[in-house]
Image (cartoon, rainbow, N blue to C red; front, top):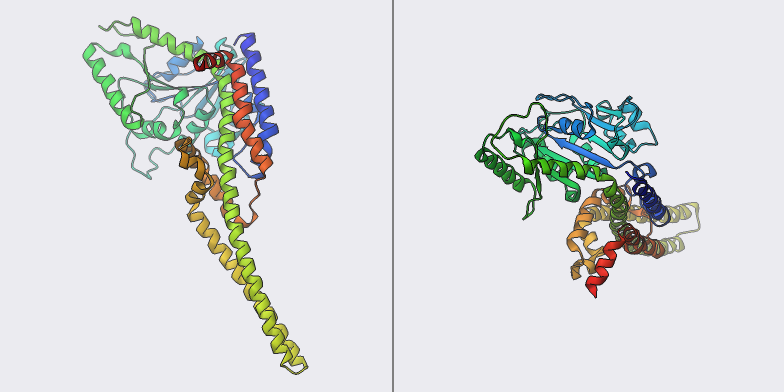
Length: 460
């Protein structure tokens, strides 16, 4: 990373974090939103995530781009954990030390338990490439069909969620396929459909080892199989671009395919990896922007639920008060018609206590039943909160996708007690909207001033 790029990355990270601190953090804390992006995460080194089957050439690719023999290579699986390859003096650091270091961005991995932590290692290497970025190598995916609920390939941690965790923080994601395994079943299918969902903008699909083909027919057959399998896993009319390449080495077999175009493709992939610092600048803003948008949906649904619940509770309280007043009147009549004796006083007191107890008991029962009903119709609460936007079709699909991402968190908060929900103030929502609509887009425009000029010319 040159000095200007490094300076811009640091400046952008600081500005994005300032916007978070001033306009987003207080609302996120008040509404118990998902853990905030820490300064370590925002300031993290540009990250490249490498995933694929164990025989797809991941380790060889990493060794070649770094110019070092960092990762072991073999046709059989060699590593069963995540390897974080960062710049340093050759030290190897175990997972416990990695996830507990507050200066790095990996503390969130502790949530996946000791089964994962024991399968993490950081290798520090003195490579020019690593001065500008960090590479994460993942365990080879198991491309075999596994029955639902089976633990035959259990790794001791939730592999899918860990890949998702790294993928969300990565600036470039490389997914390797090889000619011997062009399918998308087992873990590969799950990774594409779930762990990499909505991350197409930073995903690079790579069909590696094209030098293994002896003729054009074998190449066409394998490429066709890969495209067909990807079409099943990626719900899009147009498939994303597939980088077709091979890695130069002493074991490259003789073949009858012209490899010049594939040499160019390899260099393009290398360039995309080395461009991760530039993408990181964009992703810093995007990370805070998407966090704020999800928080906006989260808070508005909770506010709608609070209003809904409060309205019913106040009606029930009014009914309870009416019952109590009626009971008091009945008690007064009983007392007035009873002789002024200890028994009369006791009768009146007992009736008052019983009616009061029944009133509050009824309020509690109705409140709990209504809260349970509220949880069941949570989607309807979302529809009501965003009725205008959804009716007008203003990014309705995007809104629904954001809702799908925060629904579980909202449900958890409501289950803890709908009667103690925080109130969303107009000023808080205004601040959040200002960060989303004005401040973060303005920061992005500072990063890409040329794009704004092109847009203005196009409008003219």
